[in-house]
Every structure is written in structure tokens, then in C-alpha cells.
Length: 434
Image 1: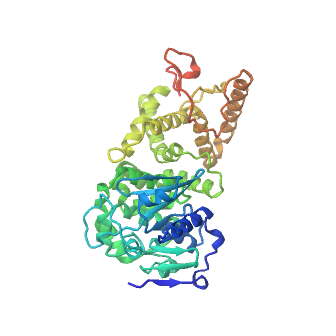
Image 2: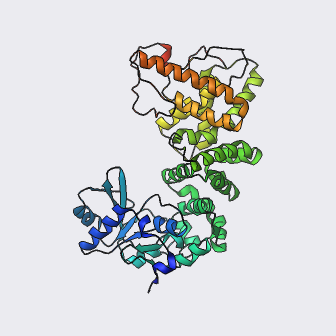
Image 3: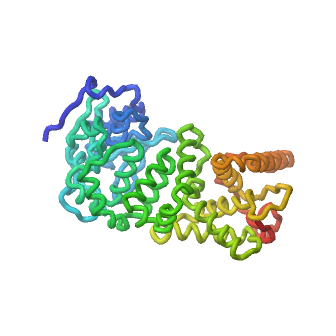
């Protein structure tokens, strides 16, 4: 098959927007006698007038040959073997051209059959992701009709949609991801296939789907994405408890997602860590559950009980399909429980605010700031807690302790040794009622 070639006058991609390290990698591979191009997301993003997050490269060089050329590279992956070429903290991903049987609907468990540039394009998921870009000639190489689809903003599978979704059900998640991120329309055949194949989503790797969900929570398009997951029935298959809640109280969840999307768009996202983003899916349900239990029990609930309820809510939403790491769960439980420290179930008049020695407390306060933005009646309470945290940091600093700014990540904090009983080392004191 002869590809369609689009010149600079056709596509108008500014070569200054190409990452210089990606360009260097392509040059080195070509000097060694291999073919190499930019591929996939970076080409798509440049065509859609978006800033690429990554610049991935496809090449005729095998993984071991790539590693031999770049001493600053490592080989990763079993299902999909590729090289990471490191430039400081930046990584350029380099993959060998692969082939694939686009007519076989068997689930793909390994993807390490080498091929040509044409075969590599044909095995990809959507036409807009199957484009190559040659930075030297400044041309787009199109084997799959991706260029006109990008211009028309259409999502179309490469090959038969039913087969491609059954080969790799995560492609259905990616279909809705690209629709949400770029406001694209879905080709009729792809949409019909999604509805037919959606039950296969539970055959996918939970780790891959979880990573897609986390990336969309970080994307600035999470509200639209989760609406699409709900509308097409995928959310019900992956997180039925959350899906059911959204059908009755959609705005409780979507308002939090809308706020984090807004903050992502305003470039204030550095402190929106993943436990905080995941908690946006849990807090509305937990809050309803806690308030219902408080009304039924007619007695105060201490933070230990609330922490147990937070654990239960996390499990109900994410299990049995997803496995949340211990560190992520711990941060979420702390963050969610602390919300009832900020806004107790019982009003007890003016009280002295005591900052706990919980390493996740600043992250908890950051989540409370999001709640206060949505509910201005909480803003004064947020400011009081922020003032208390600042004073606590100053006190620690003056005594040689380690300060904890509002946006500091808790990574690296050492756990207290056994036997310490000081209240500064208890996240949820037993006597504390809310």
C-alpha cells in the first residue's frame, strides 16, 4: 500500500513545536541506518492544535539495537517491549515497528511481532493515532486515512471496530477518552460496536484501565469523560456502585470533577495529587452514608468510625475490578476522614483548631479548599484551618521540626516508631467525635 503524503503546506505543523530530544533520537537512529518517525499522539495533537504531552517514536530498529545506540536508555515491558531514552527527567519512548492480525478478534496478550511502518500503522487503534511525521522532510505519512479524519474531528477505528475492540477492550475506554479530550464525534460503526462489545471491558487488565482513569482525572476533561462512561454503560460494568449513585445524584460527583477540570485548565494542578482526584469519586457517597448513619444512630461518630466508613466506601466503589495500592488507599482514607474534622456533624460552637500530625493533612485541606470553592459558606472555615496549619508549620520550624506547606507531597515522610503515643502521631484519635 502506498501511503498518502501530506506536505508542510497541507498540514501547517510548526517544526519549532517538535521536541528537540525527539528530533535528536530520530537523527541518531537514521544515522545508524534505521527508519524512524514521530508517531501517534504527538502527531494527532499537533494536527488538532494541542500541545503534545509526549513525543513517541517508531523505528525499524529492534529494542536491543535501540539500547546499543543510546547508552541513556532502558528496555521495559513484556507485553509490549520498548525503549525509554532518558534526558534528565524527560523520557522519549521508542518502539519497534510491529505487525498484528487485524482480522483476528482473539484478545491480545503479547504484542512483540516486528513489522514494517505500514503494518505498524494498520495495527493501531484509531485512524487519528496511525499517522507518522518525518521531521526532516516535514511531511505526514498516512496509511490509514487519519489525516482527513483529524481535520473532520472524527474518531474511526482502523479495521473492523468489533474485532479491534475484542482484541483489546481498553480501546473502548480510549475511544471515550479522545472524545472527551478533543470534543470529537464518533464514527457510527465504532459507536455501534462499542455498544455491542462493552461487556468485554472486564476482560481487560485492571491496571491499564485504572491508569486511563487516573490520566483522565488529570486531563482537565474528567467530567465529560465520566459522563460518557456512564452514558455508554461502561461505568456500570467497572464501578456499579458509583454508576448507580450518579443516576440519582449526578451533580454531587460531576460538580467536583468540573472543579478539578477548571483548576487543571488554570495551571494550578501541581498539588492535585492522585489520591485527591480519586477521592472526588468517593466523597459524595461517603458524605451521604455518614450523614445517614448519624441520623439513624442519633449519637456522635468519632473519626475512627468515619475512617472505617471511608474504607468501606472505597471498597464498594472500586472493588472487585480495581486494586488500589495500600499507599493510595491510606491517603484517601485520611483525606476523606479529615473532611469531617473540618465540617463536624455536630456544631459545638467556637473551638480551638488543632492540626494533627498526619502527613496527608495538607492534602486533606487542599480537598477541603475545592469543597469551599463549590460551597462559599465553607470558605471562612477553610481560611481558619489554613491559618492554623501555617502557625503549626511556623512552630515546628522554630523548634527545628520539619514544616509542611499546604501543597507539600507527603512522600518521603518516615513513619513514627512503635511505642510513640504522642497525639501528633495519631491521624484519628479515638476520643475525637464529629
